[in-house]
Length: 330
Image (cartoon, rainbow, N blue to C red):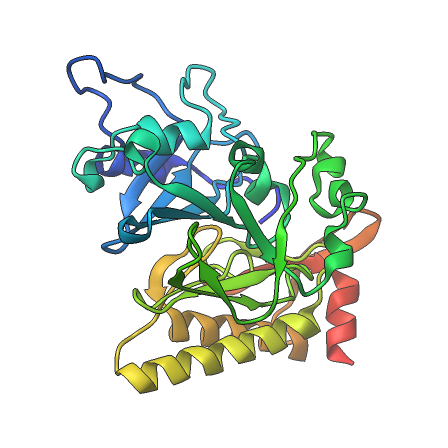
């Protein structure tokens, strides 16, 4: 999702339910404000929300604790703590993970005492997913190997959209991994996580599947209740192929286990039934391509005619260069 305003009202009303505990007494007492909030998704995984960034992106960051392997996996790193609130004291994601007491984690920080080593997976290179990546420069960073050219350092300022925003592009050197790459811990042991190439939103988009928790992480491939946004480097043709592959993948997993897979996106959607969300998003895109959905807005962005479609009820919406629609219709 790229620089779109979303109301914070409902989120702020829920802060009391998921706000980290900062009122502990004694020498470990912490500041009373943070750019992040965290809540438990599964026995091992937490959703960290950067809830009031200056770009109005409100990215979702996922943190999986693998205590037995001394590893903490971070999926995306957010907007770098660039809060709209000038009184925020904890702006660094890594500081949040290591020092802020989380109610859903028995009142302890997610990486208490910095005991676990980090492994970072980047769903794609857009700024709202990478602006804190330099905080993990001592860690393994994984990204999609589908299009190495797209992630060349000379191309990153443009492709990350940092150049468009006039902000500094983070410097990092990811390990580019193959499709169906099995993620290893810091000491080389297999985890339950598999990385899949999922081009469409961008060429470097990837998905992550957690076999143990039956959780599928899809970055910005799709989400609900906000426009799915394609930059000019995206492809709806590739997106449709990716979604078909994910639907097939999830269907196979559910058939084998008899248990539902949940989907988690880079914005808005977390812990929802994967197959239902995937098929519904595909249906909306098919309606757009066949002309059943009408253009709601039209403007020029990054030198291209850009259009917006919005489903009745607003569960799904789309913003993209009109060229991508025309290419997909052919």
